[in-house]
Image (cartoon, rainbow, N blue to C red):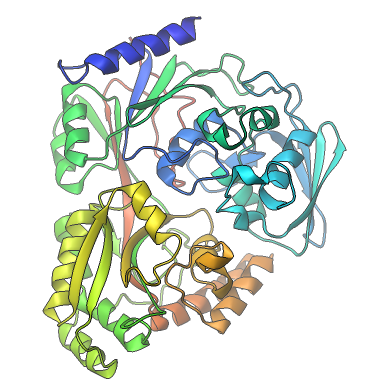
Length: 519
């Protein structure tokens, strides 16, 4: 009862927040998110905005160790890997229950992966499951006994454990899926530190403390996630006391919070790439010279210094430098060279056709996207490219971009935060990852050598050999320029100074189990 009184109190607080100089309720953390979540089903979403909620409601078999992208036990206490790298056996934690009271066990694990991977499964139609790609090598999940489960893979798969730690690997309650079907994303049930309590569309998602959490009950009574898409409104709410935490602070507001002792600003590097998808199926970007021209035409250094105000670095390719072991340090970013861009446009026989450019109002890791889009439009027009911007809210934007740009746009903003150097190129640059095949290659880039290198890299268990393959892939992609490589971002957040033990993670997730908000 106490938990639900807290949620009710939080609801009352939010109802009055616009009219008064709001202060957040005691022992309840209010987080300003950048957008409304699409769903609270971890298997059905792709955005870090949603993941920031989900990682507190659900657990996976493994998770990322605090401050790293290394995996450690979670719902699985331990695991073994066969010598050929094709069999993973997990010993599960005993006595854990889902929030709906049903038991977590090996059958529940099997249910989750069968649901995602088996099209004949009766609950597969609660999808689609866009990141099921992460587990494409899983041939069979076998229940050995109540607390032991084995994954049989078709081939060695180096990112497997890392992908299990990603939100797509979070374990949902089979009983809740059976009860709610397609509506499960509005009625989530996991085993996490917080239980879902309420979702008011475009207002808040409320999660309350799980007193029975296997890893120790949180100190916070509840967490309220508020979707505030306009950055200026988020800033105003933070300054007025209506938020305890604000993520993705606009660069030009960071100093304001740094100079105020009532706030603390946190920054954390992570594996992030901000880029422009170029439609390689249609003119003008079906010609490599035109794609290279776009890379030369855009003054990325000015974007990073003037709009992002030093909170990012110019990107050189598809792999972020945060993956130090796999990053190709020999790559240099395309320099700003408008004259070279004009020469390449002539070579590509660009005839002045209008280029539709999709821009979003804001979204996960998008880095002041309207200002960025406007500056990019000006740079491209300065070399003779005719660019028309169309701007969309984040979830609408994803609905237009993810199915592919053919017949709709020539270019679109995009940002990815990834857990492994395999993830982004495998899901967004392979020939077999085009939208009609369930992937995110929305620009239809295709290079057989890149496909070959990516397939080899994910089966290679020796990290040094994997690194060689990824570095060769980066060389080819840099030359082919299927994207405009813009920036690698350092994430940030601001909290009230009274909030304790809040951390940013390299994964870009918000782990709130240990956060405190003293009275």
